Length: 270
Length: 269
Image (tube, rainbow over all chains, first blue to last red; front, side, top):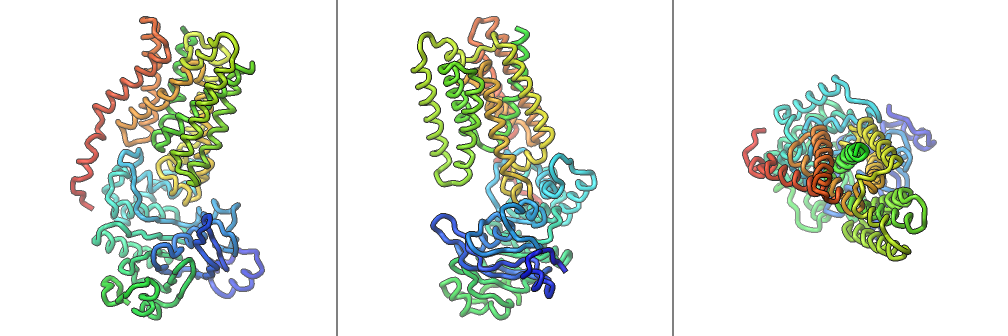
């Protein structure tokens, strides 16, 4: 049981289940734009949740609420037993892995793949402490696991999109997170690399049973391992449920505002 | 001359180290802006009769404190906001200079620097700043590396990335202040940018980049000093021209020029 919160509501309710993320009536706004409007969500330990919806639905903002980078203007969030607030964001993020979309990186950047992966350790390691030999060995093992051992000394800016994401996943693993947030991790990379990284993500979940939230706007990128899907639209959770109950042509067409045929989404296998 | 050599050594080290961070983070314009703020602050000190170093320090730290959030929050385009602060600082510098009564010898020496006549007090200040900057880089190397190469990732893994970022901006301000009297307000920035930019062309390792930049910085300062001594040229200008030549050579022989062709080669995964 992962019960850490001193809040009475959490004590009362979480002792009954394994809730590691609880968001209640969350509102987030960026100046005049409201990115999240009264979102409530519970996530149990070990769940793999797919968060889908069109662009601008608030999916990424939902992840930033969980890792403490998003500022709530209303509502509350508890993650790993602690209320999320401005004071504990850094300590919380040490326990949460985050993999974002492929970003444009300066090819001249003076840092290798191995050093980039090691950055995942730095939060937990703390200030004024150097990585140990054991941690470097763990980095090498993580790189082997994601199939990147042969590129470990290459400059990070010289990787392809797929390779960069593998390195980002290795970095998240080395952090030994209790929650893994994947924000469009296979967007903007080629189809073959997408398939390989999806398999890797599913393998990692089967191996470590990490609580995982996988955000995507593309149904073809949704891993088949999802236990539950959260459908977001216009800053709200529009629907949620098992993949079987939510992945229906009529529901998805309404969600995306365009005709969607689930049979044409070839990589989904429910 | 001994004091000048020591000032050149300290200035070469600190400016180059700070330059590595500025260049890697693509914050060149922020550095220019802080350099001009320090210059304006020093001129205020000269005009009002207090220590120019105090004015330079206050103005450079204040400009870093204003520019950092402006660049971070994205309320305005960072180029626009930094440009506004930059032009304000330049305007203030000329205003203070215009308001100064009598000869403006001291003000002009802040323009061009006067490394050959650097005071003992200034040399001690520069040496202390050099030791502090070097100590901080050694102590927080891993956090600095994470922030300058992957700031968003650093934030996401629980590194106090914002604190480190502002620490780097303030260190830039302090370095510029400490080097102002010897290198000069207009020329200091070239000494920050050129050795680091030259080192950036030559290596993919941050540690090596720091070492190469420091070597280039010291060579620039000492070779510039020697040139100015023997040819009777302004020392600051000679230092900056030497560092520019080093940058030109590093770019011409950079292995990174081949990076595009290298990237296009098929990669086995």
